[in-house]
Image (spheres, rainbow, N blue to C red):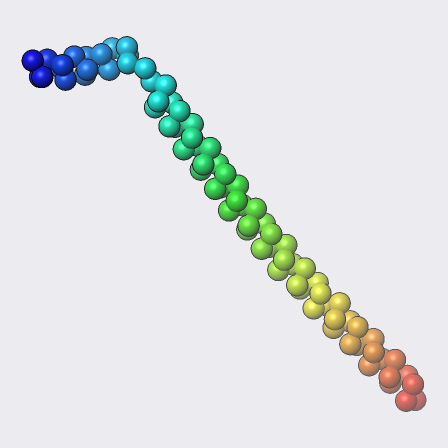
Length: 78
């Protein structure tokens, strides 16, 4: 009698009579979690790129300031 019940479950699942709601919900939750994770990775990469770009600009500005200071000192000494 136990074998008949398990066979009955397979037949019901094969014919689509068993609710697919838990499977759909699991897929939706997994997709949501993966979407949030992917968005976080993309945002982190973008912020890292922007930070690197800003650091390069700050270094350029500092170099220009140092050159300007040297130019002013050279003019004063003349």
